[in-house]
Length: 247
Image (tube, rainbow, N blue to C red; front, side, top):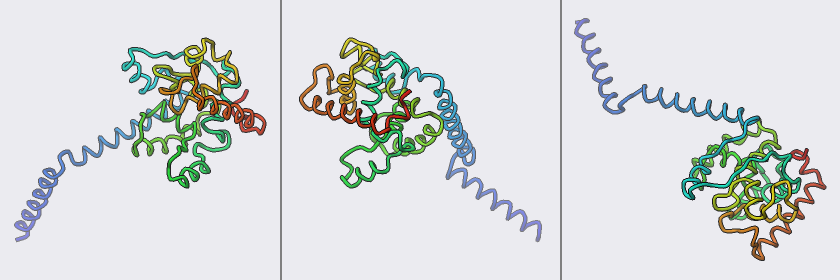
């Protein structure tokens, strides 16, 4: 009797196991591979983030895509010390005036965006740099979730000056124009080192919509916005909010 009971129990277990395999092909193996893929992605991000503290990102997914689209792009890396000091101040004033004060997320800006019904953005320069370097363009919850997870890691590893330097070299300034050096040459025929405060402000004013805004032939709106940015740049220089990235 005991042997029959044991056989029946084994048969039931075998049947359950076979049924489970039919319900979910791969079973634990699929979970293991998914776990390994996730661990590999995290390790790759960690290694790349560490490497970019001293190495310059050679390109990004978006730059590669735009290069294919236009049959080539304009881009030339320039170190922060080889930019006019007005350049980083103008970009910070335009995009993230509290860049030196937050840890990757500007909670005041987020609350203000919520109060306005989400009609204005609240992404910091750190978040934009993470998106530009590691992720993809466009609005989607998966991308925003990854951006939120990756931003604190970048804040922890990179200095503010390094984050801003990378941003200024990968940001889009026009159709097929990436980085402040290429933008300065494309629009004004000068190097980033030779940009005036007014021209730096015009380039910063174009950042929210670089494909439609032309700093070399600015509209009335763009001129007005550039004047506001120039005033903001002077303000953050005077009140210390530019201290974290100025040499």
